[in-house]
Length: 409
Ligand code: GLA
Image (cartoon, rainbow, N blue to C red; front, side, top):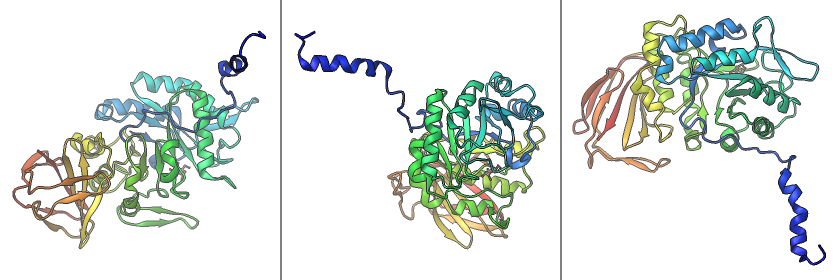
């Protein structure tokens, strides 16, 4: 050994450490190559709140397949709050044994056997919003448990987080998921309090931008200490955030209320605007009993294609006048989706002259110039061709409804 040069001795000394890796190192980066388009699925909260059990979840998984929702692209079956029981003697979280007597592994296996994926819910604080055990102090054990069950998606909430800072807390759960080793989508749910769009893109795949949605088109539900927001109220809070969204990292304006009681026109407008915003499409209705109308709304392939477009650009409000708004979303292959949204209580006429002026999207760095290029127009709700950009587009938009056209060359 004494004849070996010093730098070789140094290298030999470093070998054991290299071989073991740094087992204290933490990886705060989300799993790559997930949610490259906005996640699509179902979540129990909006309709069922705390009333979740394995029978419901299995029936919803069945309905996801039998209704054609799965074929339309919906994949995740996400159990929200209140599935939890106690921790065992070693600290591992267990499901509520009355509600989930077969256990979570069996439930995940069932969901996977249908070609679907399973999501679960926890909270960065000591307790979830529904008062069940939170993950604070148990992050690595919880991640290990979810991975052992076969979970594919974690929604991680922000109640009872006294003294915690969001960025750090979400990095801890990301490190725990990485350590557990099973790729999972991480849905950051801290309601936009600490600007998750600034630190979220490397830590998680989607982040809530607001407080909870409320099942109305245009209202605010005041719950005293917190407010829930109607569809229009939530939509208005997204616009300045569009530059933060893209493949693998999405603004989340909360889960859908389609099929939960609003009339068909309002459901259609809600669904369309979520698609225009490249929002995650997590349905929140009872898939087992939904009406043909609701099903038709949720499975319209051409509207889904607007949401799922691979460019992953969140749309923008181009014009607003007398409660009539014009929204644009650039799509791959020099296509564009254009939505005319009528927020008023009366029908409103639209006349849109495509050739009047080029429209630039400063974020996506693309331009719609109908004076140079002629586009064909197709209405995805009516499922028909409606002319070209050579002539101004003329239509009447019913109250609380949309007229959409997709432009292609
Ligand atoms: C918070 C979340 C909701 C839901 C509930 C569950 O309010 O924002 O989406 O998960 O908690 O208690």
